[in-house]
Image (cartoon, rainbow, N blue to C red; front, side):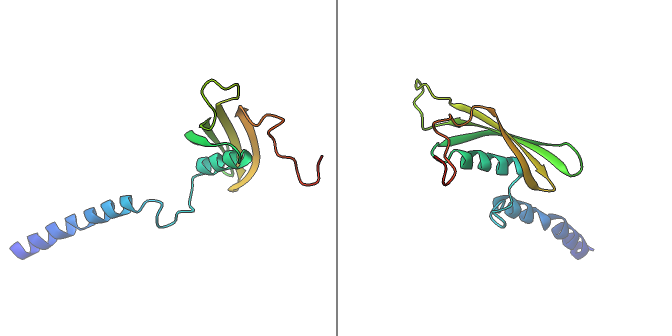
Amino acid sequence: MRAAAAIIALAALAPLPGCDWSQRMEHKLAPDTLSLADRCAGVMTAAMPYAQFEIGDRSSQAQSVRTIVARASATRTDLAKDSPGERDFAVECTYTDNVLTAFHWTKGGPAPDEAPNPAGSR
């Protein structure tokens, strides 16, 4: 009877180390699996490669079964606090079937003289 009780107690406690292990391994088993909001923040930083950002809030909201709108905000950290440039930025990304279909700045964005020119443009 005691052996059966011990086996049941061990079986009940067995999953607990697995929980701790899975929390420590978060984003290490599949580091390329990011949320759509994280991907949106990545697009924002790619849109201004010359700037350094501290990513802030990220969120996403389903518009339909196939469409999700993700939002990300950031603070530009490579500008002095009293410099005339914009420091706060925000973007919105629309994903349809997990593919980026729209991107726009909702706050800030590259100044016209900072925006990179496409190849061949003058």
